[in-house]
Image (cartoon, rainbow, N blue to C red):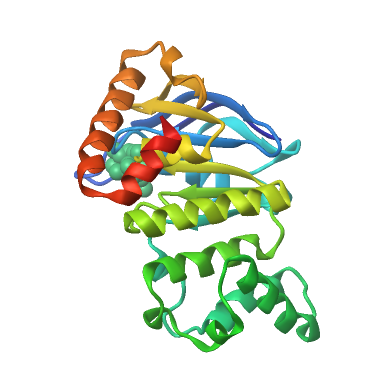
Length: 266
Ligand SMILES: Nc1ncnc2c1ncn2[C@@H]1O[C@H](COP(=O)(O)OP(=O)(O)OP(=O)(O)O)[C@@H](O)[C@H]1O
């Protein structure tokens, strides 16, 4: 279980042009249960990725605490079972690494023996719908969807209990997005992983998430069940949902994939 309690984060610096003391997150408290998917939704600049970095232990909060299974995420032990998939799949994989090397790296770090790594890589590739011929490919030889599948394979390689997905499907075209969302659902069903799904895309969030957390200017506006969106109370969340509905309506005319997703979501 993930517990975030009264977290604050500011960025500041000494330079004349720096954003001195800019408070990016404040009063952030929430809990994510085992096996739950929480969507984090908000406008650009609202603090979503900053919160993602704090959840991954890449940065530390100025105030407050983040715990995973009662261990402080600021300590290495606390973040051992949390992994990440980012938007920019092209730069997430080292350009000179083959898929095999990219997948072997975390396994070695987590103590897998050389003799077992090959089989594990084949298994992981199968889990994300790729065959072992992908082992020898370099990132530039992969489509966006394939590259993101490799990133997901890497994220699950160390058997995390939680994955932070930061705009992980946003750069993919609609049909590939849908396939990756399906894959994430399947993996969650198989492994019981919880996800923190950071996104602008409310449709994708509703499709994948159990609850949605709307953040605005670094503060939580509202947390709502994805099955009870008609019950949102804050104007901000209602406006974002309304906008997503309109966009879905526009997409309906031009995209069969969008239609399929819209029907299933709303
Ligand atoms: N390292 C940093 N130094 C200074 N300011 C930062 C830093 N990282 C983020 N910020 C600022 O914090 C605010 C929140 O940024 P963040 O990237 O968390 O937002 P976001 O909601 O993820 O936005 P987007 O959806 O556009 O990615 C922004 O105003 C951003 O400029």
